[in-house]
Image (cartoon, rainbow, N blue to C red; front, top):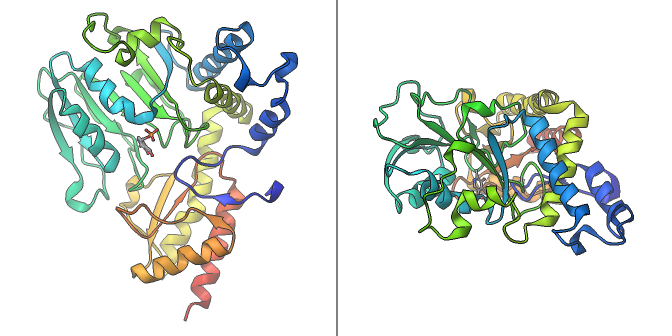
Length: 360
Ligand SMILES: Cc1ncc(COP(=O)(O)O)c(C=O)c1O
């Protein structure tokens, strides 16, 4: 690593590609002859309009977003979407939520304030698997089916999307956004907080099919209506200019890497190094079913909490950061998003192997 930087395994905010950080550094004092930093720039200026337009277009190119979907940059993080989704999409006041961990649980709590929610859950086994959703009992008048496509805390990911029987699919992609190709047409709405795989915290990207944007929600506070953001090109008020700028850089960077197929292959190769080690180790083991393992968030444990803590402390001392597991799961968690270099995973595995070999 350059600049004395650390391999940072944080679940988010997380590592950014070094090349992107360097570009941002180079443009910091005077963005392309504008005489100012992007932080100082009016969002109504022509130069900023180009930044946001390019960010949207590059994201559209990367994901192959069809023309009948809007791309919105909204503040309030992914958490605000837990509320905005039911407020905007529950026409009949009914939805089906698949509870695969802490994040969908939070979304369910908010949806229940708006309407009737049918819950299918993997809570019985501490969210270590994804429920079989090939033949769900979906109410005829349900407005949508909701999933968290990658569970950041528990480390599971959907391999096959649920059979929604024609209902709209809504997905929280926060911790796997742009980690692999995505067929946007399979979804009615995709959203992702950007601070894991894309950029700085404080913004969510919402990709929504146009016909789901309602114009009959006058009683809903204006900021909570998707229509407000769609009509104003994500500039109803001052947007998170800085996050949009940084995300735009990452979109360009991913395009240059070869697009999402290439990114996916890199992620598969990277995660395999860690999972192969966990499968061979006598000291460490993964915590979820192998067929739903996340390529982004890898939780693992030893045989005791004391030893877990000892390993976390040792990794920190050795220069690795943020490997402590989430408090609800314990153990360790390595978040290895797009920007974590392969060398980071190799170095961590080498360290864990040595720790195990030398442990008495
Ligand atoms: C899957 C998932 N959804 C939602 C959130 C909440 O994101 P935010 O902090 O941007 O509101 C997180 C945060 O870690 C997450 O991992």
